[in-house]
Length: 314
Image 1: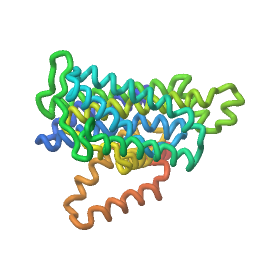
Image 2: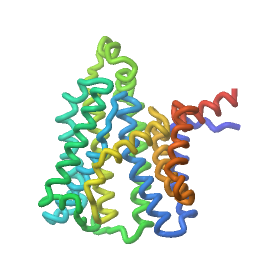
Image 3: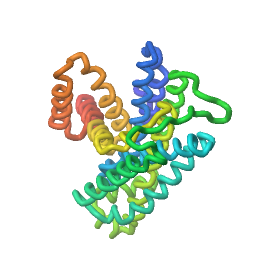
Image 4: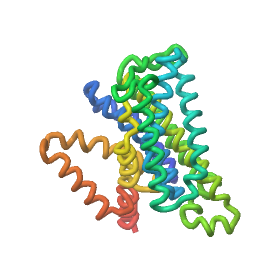
C-alpha cells in the first residue's frame, strides 16, 4: 500500500530523517565539520535556487552576500562588542537593504548582461573587503568571537551540527512554502515569459527584486554563522570562485528543485574530499564527473532520477 504523502511532505520527512540519523556515521570532528559545511552551502543554494531556478535570474556574485554577512557580524562583535545574535540580524538586514537597492537596476538586464552585472557587484564587494584593512583586516582576515545566543554557546562540532541542521530544515520548509504561495506562482510566470506575465498583471520587477533580496538574506545569515563557527574570516569567502561553486551546486542538483539544491550542495562538498585519494588526478576526475552529469542529466541529478522513477512505475 502507498501512503498518501505529498512529495514536499515526504521530502521534508526524508530530510529530517537524514539530519537525525547522519550523526550515527560521523566518527570525529572532521566528519562533523564536513557535514556542517554541507549545511551552510545547502542553505545558500536553497536561497539561490529561488532566484535562478524559479525566477530564472542568474547571479554570479552571490558569495559577496555571504562575505557581507560574515564581515558584518565579525566587525560588529569583534570591533564594537555587539551581541552575536544582534550582529547576525543587523548584518542580514543591511545586506537585504543593499540587495534591494541594487536589484532594481541590475534586474532590468537580461541574459549575459545580467550575469556580468551580478559578477561586477560581487567583484566590487570582494575588492572592498580586501582594501579596507583597517576595518576588515585586509587579505590577512580577522578573528571573530564565538557565537552565543540567550546564554547558550555551542561547545563543539556536534552542537554546531544540530544548529545548522535545524536551520537547513527550516530554510527548506520556508522555501517550499514560498514556492507554493502566490509569490511562487508569480516567479514561475516570470521564468516562463516576462512579457506574458506582465500581460496577465504580474509585476515582474517587484517579484524579481523581492526574491533577489530574500536569496541575499539567506546568504548573509550563512556568512555570519560560518564566521562564528570558524572564528576567523578572510576575503576569500566573497570570491568569484565561491560564487561559481554555488551556481554549480544549484545546476548540478537540479534547478527549480529545492531538494535538488540540497543534494547538489552535499555532492559538490563531498566529492573533493572523496577524490583526495586520487592525488594528482583529483581535479581531472572531478571535472569529468561534472561534465558527465551535465551531458547525461541536463535537468540535474534529482529531477532526472525522479523522472526515471516515475517512468519505471508507469
